[in-house]
Image (cartoon, rainbow, N blue to C red):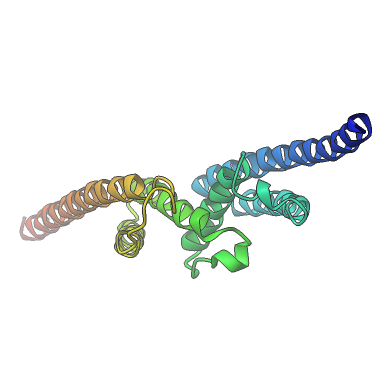
Length: 211
């Protein structure tokens, strides 16, 4: 029947596919690891380290996309979608912190679905940045971070797609709403505290002058 020859050919095809799958997995892990390192460096204020990690993540992404050029099935299954999302998150966060416009999905070379969820996750990282700014008494930066969070949340909640189209979008948007509300409360309390301190200091200076 010729099954031995046919299965031998199939075996070669599947071995090549499995080899490519392993390469995509390795690239995806590197993307995730480097993107996470970039986020940590961003919060530490180490821009050089963040840019270095993003560059390494970009090289791994290029490698994964090269494999996917001949294996489109790996684009939306396995670990690569998560890698796309974390890569998008790290790059969006880096641009926001620098005060720049967020890069587009096309520029990042990631699917729009991963870009959307990456943006949603970046909102959480902006809350951390806002709180770090408040601890430094940098109220202007905290207010700017809150403004970006609100803008991103407003844009994301206008998207209404089922889980099958954009996985976890509704849950992430719900989380964003809570994060925005909590951050607004934190910033408001901090500003009120600042005004009270300034008022007390002004009163003490005036009293010292009169004394």
